[in-house]
Length: 492
View 1 (cartoon, rainbow, N blue to C red):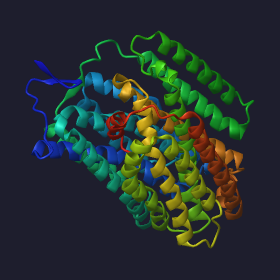
View 2: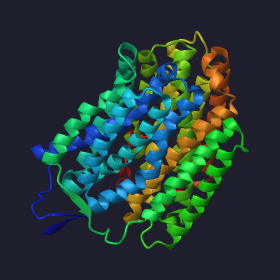
View 3: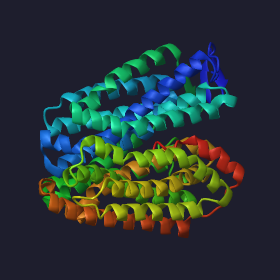
View 4: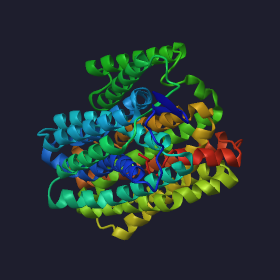
């Protein structure tokens, strides 16, 4: 027999968890380790890109796909992963995602070619799409209402600490052992999460999900993203008349049309298009696209330049990224509280512009630039992000109906991932970076300067868009209800 707990349905034997209880602490630990595993991997891989390129070859395009294959499948399957958890059980889908992610990581660790590594990274993204929505859903559904906010806060804090340690630990593993070890370490973590999850995490489902899943929409979304992304990537390097570019582009465009048609007709769409009837929701997601697109390109190119132009070790390059995580960890919640008092418009305007200034500062890096110069640039970038992320997320959630808050959060995350896909390809191409640039420090430095200048302009446009389009209709209570629903640290 099943009983009701909030919006979830659980077995009769289920007892809501308390933070101070042993099952509550074990459940919290499992969700922290699971989500941190996926977040750490996406962060550390950027530090490893130069070594991966040296060992496996393939040039800039292969490195772009090493990042984008993961981002593509994560974005494509994220909404489906959340829906599967609601229907089949949050614990079940979360643990399947953990196992899937770990097995794909093992393939990454032994990949002999860049092609196999890219394929394994795509499989990793599917695993992350299954486990990522489940971690927060488990906390929301399993803990008593009085402890729910504390559990989410602890999850945010410890996950943030893990991510802060990640670049330094990853850099040490890459320098002292091998880049392959950054994938191998996922296996023991997954074993721990699986053992804890089976013994301590209760199973919960969403009782409102009674009709059929939108599998058609999910498949169309995957095909649309895959076809259009491949066409964009190959078209920039092989020319737009290339047969594979034309074919994949047409498939992607057709799939987009089918997806929109299915979502309009579906009684239970995976992406309710009515969400975009809200100007506030659409504007916030447009700002997300610009901010996270520029951020994704910056974090893709910066570790490469630090190691190949400034000749930093992987440990030093990883340490240069620490201010981004540390400052966001320290300031994001404070900026969220400030935005709850003054509204989202000013923080969402000022934040991207400040980040743009930090990126523009970094654009002048060259051989001989001091470590302090790099840290100043990343710190300014981080200050702008900390100002932006919490009010941006709260705006997205508060501009959607309460029953659509989960979907709205997933849409916003997907927009950020898709922005990474696009800008990691487009900005380097616009800056003149090619496969040959990786072997020539001068060409790489010049291309990086142009790319970061473009990224800073994109961030500035994001701030101006927020100033023009974002309004402040939300009450203080609505902001307080929205803000804890997503962790600012869990940014691409």
